[in-house]
Structures are given as structure tokens and as C-alpha cells.
Image 1 (cartoon, rainbow, N blue to C red):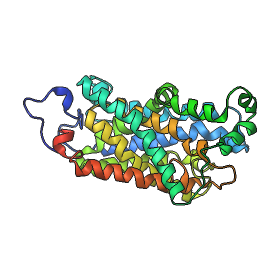
Image 2: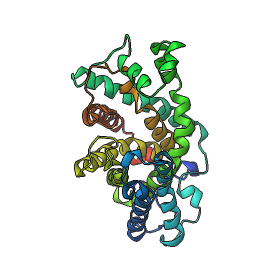
Image 3: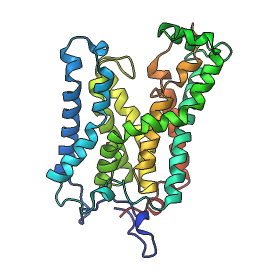
Image 4: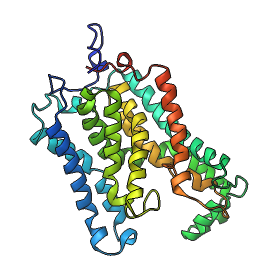
Amino acid sequence: MGLPPESSSHPSEVATASDGDRRGEVPWLAVVGFAFISCVLAWGVMLPVWIGGRGPSTPLLGLLMTVMMFTPATGALITIFFLQRPRPEQVARYLGLWPLRPVGKILGLSAAALFGMPLIITAGALLAAAFGLFSIDLTDFSGFAAQLRQSGEGATLNDLSVGQLVAIQLLSLPVAALIPNSLLALGEELGWRGWLLPSLLPLGTWPALLITGALWGFWHAPLVLLGYNFGLTGPSGVILMIIACAIFGILIGWFRLRSNSVWPSVIAHGALNAAGGFALLIIDIRSPFDPVSTGPLGWSTWIVIMIVIAALAACGQFSARRLRQR
């Protein structure tokens, strides 16, 4: 399961790969149970959307989506206390919630996540524009202005120019990434990167990262099948979501392993959600928009994030020595 901790290492530098599994084996019963519980709970929460016949126009959809985000954390806690044997001796440590040491590393990686993830989303959108996948309007921001008018917020344009509103949106990204997006992302990250990723580490770093990301993508099925994320309502949308989450999950999982804390992953996830609408701020009103290629989870952004992952790997950032796995 990687290199053993050095005798001089600070305890918090050692990834909690298996606090309760001394033999270095994957707790498969717990893993299967966690995946099943999390997915069933997600479908259960979204059931009113499916049986009501109104789909995305269902009242309280936003509330249901918020509740759904906490189903992985619920699944992790149920798994720890009822399925995982032996049970982790220190649940908060196993999940990466505590201790917050070394403070400098955690703060540094959290800052990198906070500002780096929006840069990746921005680069993905600009790459899509460079490929000719959509047209941008950096003068009048006509697409964004049309969205404001359609949403009934056109009166705001009487007080501020659309360019000023775009600037406000961009400057407020770090705040929005933390509140409310990171608070909501905590519900997901406690499950995926908090519990599942460390539990799968006996398989090796890369398999653990990819499997965790793939399951994270599959868990989104109740929403993706409604047309969210990719505008597709069939299995192809779920497959695209699995691929996207597997790729993004490598970087978000790296934050977890590199810091030995779930908090940088939480912030990375929150920043991803906060920056997801960047392309819609700069799109030309006359331009088509295909989420499969141009959206924040589209393949143009996959290229950018894979370049980032390759650069980290080339610098040895995925090595056992860097991650200090037990």
C-alpha cells in the first residue's frame, strides 16, 4: 500500500489509507455497501422528481438536490458504524476531517484548489472557443445579458452595465466557492474522498482514484438522466458523467492524498461548482452551446485537466513518497 511512514514523519503527514484495516486489504463488503447505500439514498431523495411527472420543473427541486448531496456522507457514516470491520478507531481522522496538520500544507493546497479549479474551468471554455465550438462576446456579453432578461433580472442592467455584472460574478467566485458551494460539497466529499478513496488505497493510488471518481459519476444518474450536466436523458449522459468525474476525481483525490485532509478536496469541489457557469458569462447570444464539448464537464475541459494531472505526475506528485500512504 505504498511506502511505510518514516519514523521522523509527523503523524498528520501519513495518509489515512486504512485506519481500521491493519492487513492492508480493501474492505469490499463495506465498499459495496457504501456504493449501494449512497446510490439508493440518492434515488430515494430524487424520487418525487421522477414520479411527479414534472421533471426539472418539480417544485423544491433545488432543495432535493441539496439533500441529495449529503447522501454520500450519510452512506459513509452508515457504512462505518454498521458494515466496516474492523471499525476505524478514529472516525474523524479516517475521513480526513481532523487533525488539521500540517496547517501550512492544508492551507496552501486549499488555496490552490480555490483558485486553481476556476482557472481550469476558464481554460477549458477558452480552449473550446479556440476549437470553434462556440463563439464568445467579450464586448457586450450578449449571451449573459440575454440570460438576465430571460430570468427576469433585466432591471439590474439599468443600474449596472453587463460588463460590471460579469466582473462582479468573477470577483465573487472565491466567496461563492466557499459559501455555499463548499458547505454543500462537504456532503459529497465525506463519502467519496473522505471514506471511499482511503478505503480503496490498498489497490494502489491510480486504481483507487479512478474507481472513486467513476462511482462518483454513476451516483449522479438521478440528475443526469433528467438532462442535467449534458442535456442528455439516456445512458450516454451517465457514461459521459462517469468519464468526467473519473478525470476530475483524479485531481480532487490528489488534494485529499497530498494534504492528508478532506478539506482541500471539499474546496476544490466547491470551486468547481461555483465556476461551472463561466462559459455562459462570455458566450455570444448567436452562438450554439453544447454541454458535451463546451460545458464545465465537457471534453474540452477534460483536455485541460488531463494536462494538469500529467504535469503533476511528471513532477512526482503522485509518488508514494509524496503522498506518504501507509
